Length: 259
Image (tube, rainbow, N blue to C red; front, side, top):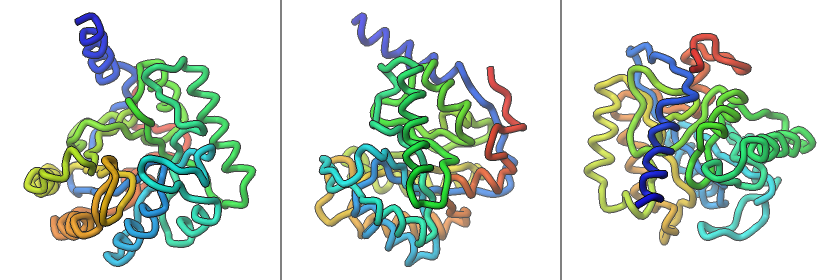
């Protein structure tokens, strides 16, 4: 009971504190497709599907995980990161060592973010991190402050879309994984509601393969979701491009007010 109460308080405080509020203009709907960690199939299958539809995605990378095996498959290599950028996708930050912001201290979280940025800067890749995704169980308020002060937009979870006044330090996302696979009707309705509300729907997943892990999705249904998103009239863009379309600056967001 004590643990449940503590978890409820963490969720409440993360939702209501350390916010950077921004009001969506309400004239255009957006959809972004994002991948965490990310396994090679997110690029070879997920990226191929996005390109076939004429759109691109955001790929969140933890440099310490490169060339390792994970429950969602083999993680990408440095060469794969080159290909990701050549194909027009965005690379986002996922901390260096994939640390859980709900349990680590803020200074440790900051060091892992900075180490990931340093690894990117020392690589041959000609890009920078504009956006961020919280690994594992999301942030606590101190780690939310750390990430919110370093990136234009920070993505969490929540299984819904962003509308009206949104929190740039904790953007909501809908995870395509084992939980949501039987809920295609729910996904379809979510895309329609996002279009009606001129919101920003961010999909998140890991692997994309015929037999996906518990954290991934299958190619046929993924392609269907991309198609539905485009047919809804939404602008399907990587997260940094949505931020640019909203007029949000790379280093600090003038329209956002921390509290």
